[in-house]
Image 1 (cartoon, rainbow, N blue to C red):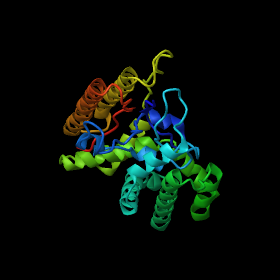
Image 2 (image 1 turned 120 degrees about the horizontal axis):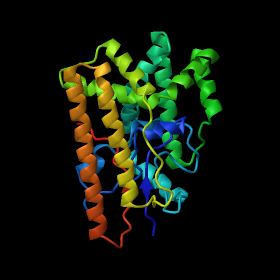
Image 3 (image 1 turned 180 degrees about the vertical axis):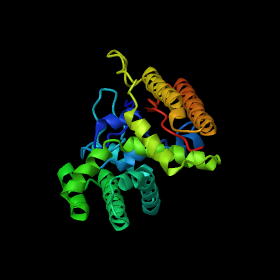
Length: 292
């Protein structure tokens, strides 16, 4: 019986996973208790942005309790269930590339034409990576990816790009915060957006490693990871007044409070599902992010 806990997918640099947790299992409509919450935010931009995953472990795929990846067919099935519609996958990846990379490409000093070309290339490579994940096709390694990017912006810019990309989770988070603040009527200025990225990049990592005896296939492990995320967000709110106005800080606090309450509700839901269905071996996931 497989019981799975999936956490953040690695991007080019695994350390990014400390900040955004990805969901490793998408429940099917036939599973008990499945509702809108499970489908609200089932894969983070970091998961779909991963281009350097190991071929036998598609990004964000479930893992067994023993720490090894599920068999290849199960992993492909999980990936396929996330992207059943090709156009939906393209739309989603396009949106996530725009959100995550637009400011990074601006900081790189690329021309508008170069930015458009890099975004288009990233989208195509990410779609190919998702397709390879469930069809078993070849995947780009890090060197091949860099070479394709160099064809567009040159070797020097590629090295600068890769250095900035180590902080892609922070760029994504800044873009997401900016979108929410804009909807709340307190949009970021360009200066504030730059300052927010710098604040997040410079932020000290307060996270700690889970206890060695903590079962990674347990509710306790999910609770530990969520507590880490909540603590991170608390410190971000404490730092935010150095960049944001008081109204913007209030909006950011409300955003993080909403996420915290949703994560707590998701943990409780998973607890109840396992209690009600003790023989099914229902997989666990670390709640990531729900659109507000």
